[in-house]
Length: 143
Image (tube, rainbow, N blue to C red; front, side, top):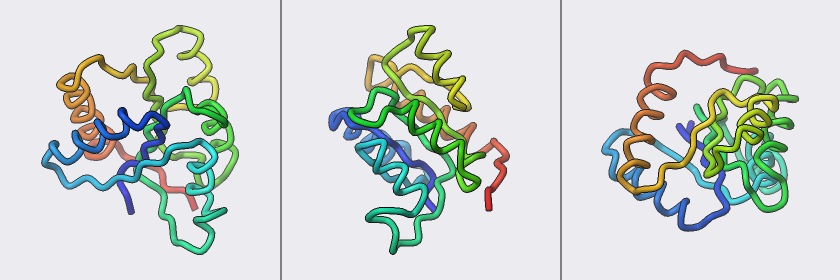
């Protein structure tokens, strides 16, 4: 089982996330995908993931401004399936627009986090997310 599935189409943001995860010094496993459609395939075990056993992550960290299928679309579709209905999903976005926040919550996210502007602040935020969502949060596991 992976701890975090991060869906991010910006290569620089994905690289920063990867470096910070390694730097965190905690036992965290993660996978980074670059599109909403690939994330849905991964979560449903479809497409190129059909022949693989793809256990659900403990947490889905989701950029909302994805090319193609948006993060909001991913949340809507994930919440429609028994397997991913209770999956903790955190919107991880550069936008702090109230309409974006509202749309994300209406779609079914569990939390909305604005990406910090600095490497150090992003590292601190990811540490807090790890502490709560992976260490302290009690999850419901879908069938």
